[in-house]
Amino acid sequence: MNLTFTEEQEMMRSMVRNFAENEVAKEVERMETEDRFPKEVIQKMGELGLMGVPIPEEYGGSGMDFTSYIIAINELAKVSASVGVILSVHTSVGTNPILYFGTEEQKKKYVPKLASGEYLGAFALTEPSAGSDAASLRTSAKKDGDYYILNGSKMFITNGGVADTYVVFARTSEEKRSKGISAFIVEKDTPGLVIGKKERKMGLHGSNTVEISFDNCKVPKEQLLGEEGQGFKIAMSNLNVGRIGIAAQALGIAEAALEHAVEYAKEREQFGKPISHQQGLSFKLADMATSVEAAKVLTYQAASLVQKGLPCGKEASMAKMYATKTAVQTAIEAVQVFGGYGFTEDYPVERFFRDAKVTEIYEGTNEIQRLVIGKHLLK
Ligand code: CAA
Image 1: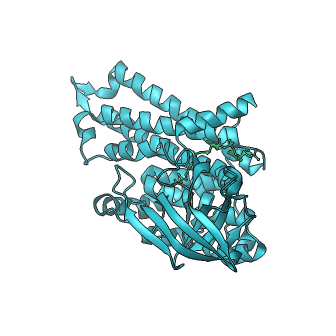
Image 2: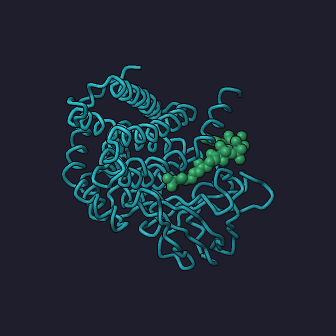
Image 3: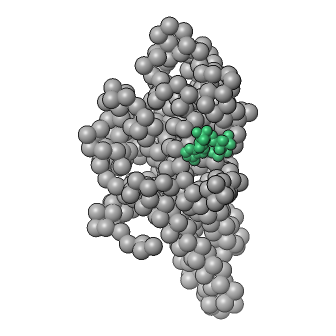
């Protein structure tokens, strides 16, 4: 695979890098210390067209290719993994399901607002007892005249509490496991939609993660997304693409950790010379750089499949599994290169270390990615 980018994609990279270094970096401290959602950053991203990079222009998006979108997440995550995941969830699983499965009316009503950043999107699949086994979800949606009445609770909802629309998965039939699940577009002010506890997390402090519940939540029947029983397919097919976004987020963390480690190794002197002159340390950096490069190839290869309209399930899982493992390992090694300083909040590597871990967990744990890859190999 040839990892070269078009002029347009390179322009996207330098525009987002500039924005991240000038506008996002200065907000990182507040996100970290106050657990603060960076709403001003997200608003500016909307103005720059970043909240709808791959969305067609006719639906208010920037109409750019999928690789440009992945570049945007990759560059943002180098500076703030929180902003990276906010964008990835908003686009891949908050907006795309409506774009690909919505009626023309639903698309016209929601996609331009989401693509411009006026609305923020979220995705509500996971439940307290249904994580990896998503098809076992219990939230119910019972048809009642012109409405569906939703009851149940959802867990670990990224962008929850700050989102304007939620793509919600609920059971419309008790008998059929994955085929009894349907998808709904639920607006934030719908009576019966209750925003619950905000999680206190190890990392990603700028990204909101909340519980939500549905208490006889009355959703108009026009808000059904796709057909009854099609919900699991909608969730899975959008998660395929979403996993490439998470790979890009993880790649950004790994690249940032490597860059900081290399710079520090050149500056820090011990035994009368920079520590980079110690072969043991240069070997460590070499291993980190090789893994980062491999993660980059897998991530952009998966992105190129989406761009060409080809199946990407296996490659998305491979990219997600490898890039997120690389993010964790590279961040751990970066802390090691920094020694005692790496364990303090004076340097960003401890944040990379904390932010990286969840990438191996959300949008399908890396064990689930192996399951998906295995199924593809053996079918
Ligand atoms: N793409 C398209 N279709 C898929 C699919 C995929 N990746 N995976 C499964 N399907 C389809 C299957 O083809 C099957 O269809 P048919 O019945 O028509 O053949 C149907 O869905 C059921 O598939 P399985 O029998 O394989 O389903 P399963 O119950 O065994 O589960 C699983 C499969 C892969 C384990 C799935 O449950 C899974 O991916 N679990 C992980 C859940 C997950 O990723 N959650 C993320 C939450 S969102 C999030 O994290 C966002 C965030 O905050 C950052």
